[in-house]
Image 1 (cartoon, rainbow, N blue to C red):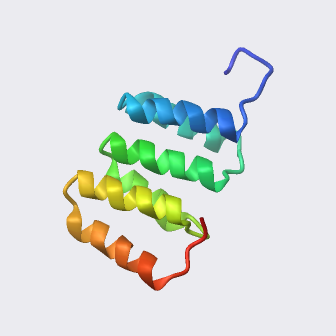
Image 2: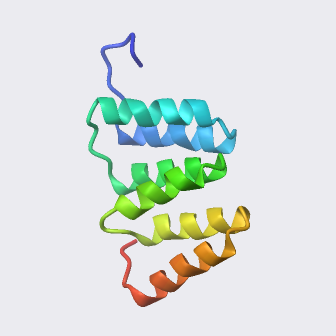
Length: 109
């Protein structure tokens, strides 16, 4: 990315983060997150959810929670990612809390 004049868009970044998530590559995922921050890239909900999912799959729950808490508006996809990720990490009370919030609020898809 750094040696080319082409800039990746949200779709490309989201795809790279999905690969990081699948292969549990936290270092590359963090580098992508840093790149997004350095370039002041406006994140759409898909990119935000990809970051959240990557952090959860790599075991960095605090970073995922931080992103999720800042996300406005929250959507059903990001909320489901949080519930699934926290359940997989055996953080059942936290997962149940988000699930209950989903039931109370009308989340966008």
